[in-house]
Image (cartoon, rainbow, N blue to C red; front, top):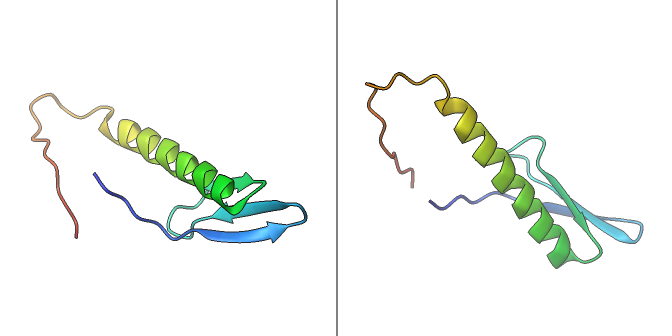
Length: 71
């Protein structure tokens, strides 16, 4: 599955801090822009994984589950 998000990266003193407007709570930081971007991507991945797992808790065993792709 491919997910794309907008990374907003700003300088804060000696650090770069990043966040994405599409996924509140996803933040990253780093000594370089690349490190900040990588940490932000890791945060996004963890949040999506947790939300997917949480969303499937309690799904009845006879419910239809399938992948829906959005372009």
